[in-house]
Image (cartoon, rainbow, N blue to C red; front, side, top):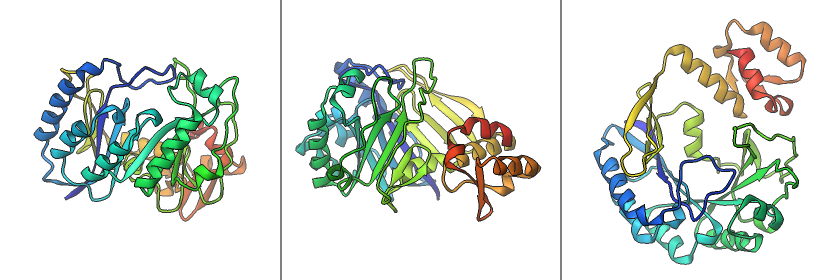
Length: 325
């Protein structure tokens, strides 16, 4: 039985944030009809060949769904052998929802905080303030041992605010992303992130306490197989990439690529550069001179037969990748 990661897209929000490029909408009257389509899609998939290692409900704002609606999804899902995550917004998390999440097997909460500065939150168009974010983290920590938060840095006109110690004590994981423009250009200002040593940087944008790295995301980054359900969801199965169209109630799946050995190698190098475990030197045969040059410039290091991007190298990952493929 092959390991499988399962992603479920919930494309509904109270309002669209200007920085978000995920497929979502604000017509909440369509949620029940969407769930009918989603449940039918999940039921049609043959899980018998797989062991589900992780389940991830993303969006959009999955915490907009009622406990009854959440249960409807999990009724047709096989149990997960490990991590089950739901993304939530601070202003839509309640005690009842936490209890309902635990009842269906959810064991990890990812909270879209984005900033610990009220002015920044207002400029981002968020519907919560710092006080609500802290209250949501406190609530989540009362019900779950594995709490993650999302933050954004490199926001023009604002400075990144490190979460207070009282918050860091209650979470196990942080994802910290640089803001992107509408044309997908990263607004990288090299704003530093300083966290306690208990949080190690295991991927370019992700930090975790030991043992609390995101198993679901690691499946993506290690080239594992995954299935996506819902509009705009993506999948990788048996060497083929699939995607669902963006049509909310009438989406369908289509093949986006059949991976060749060369494509697999290029992806493994790209993903390995993002991870602190690095790229196996076996993938870099014939690039020894390039590797030596990158070492001389302090952009990479070699450890345990793997090439690992240094802190300096992490800032120019695309250029490193182009040099090594």
